[in-house]
Image 1 (cartoon, one colour):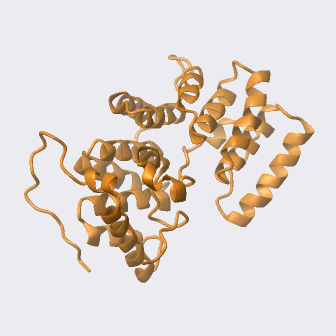
Image 2 (tube, one colour; image 1 turned 135 degrees about the vertical axis):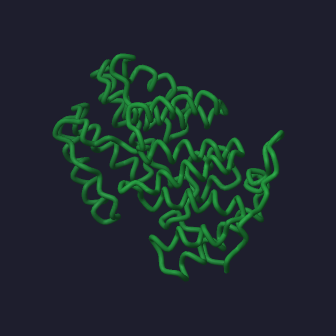
Image 3 (spheres, rainbow, N blue to C red; image 1 turned 60 degrees about the horizontal axis):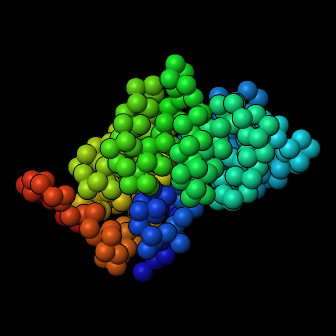
Length: 277
């Protein structure tokens, strides 16, 4: 059985990892919260390529060391650290900026995201609630608030955050992806599939989002469709291997198998798409 890789398309996101502790260890670094880099004057986009990310993080760290707590340097370095799954370091970096600028919404938003990444959920919930005002809401922060609520078990509140975020940013794939995962956790797999398909239809969609869709399709038993989704990022053999890995994980993990069962009161489906392979 091929190794289930966080680097490729079929990675469980932190939302699932938080709910399914049995698979948390190997997959804990797969999640990102969809930062809005352009909202910070003078900031640059965080690279996704590993070698470029390391170089970027090194340079961002040097800028931060020259002026700890400076807004742009702190935010960029914290984001680079988060991208490298160095979550506790990211918290320490952005916390310095938050102490210097306790009312700066950009800093508070980044601080809340770092806290959420590091698993400090109550603290993240509190900080994020102060990262915008009702007359100037931020969809990216709302989306993270939704993931925090989901990880705290409050799916109803999470869905409200996602709906509010989508009012501000209609069709935003990162929000739709978080919503889809939330619906999957609530065993609403058909609705989860719809949200994730809408997400991956966006030009801004990435391999992680397509991986989330593949996971939900596999939970529904739609293995052929899951494999087809994987071919957008992988060779046919690699896509097939990753679907096999998903199937293996579902078979071995009771919590994942349970997600594939209908919620109480749900009507049985008329049909199910079977493995096309």
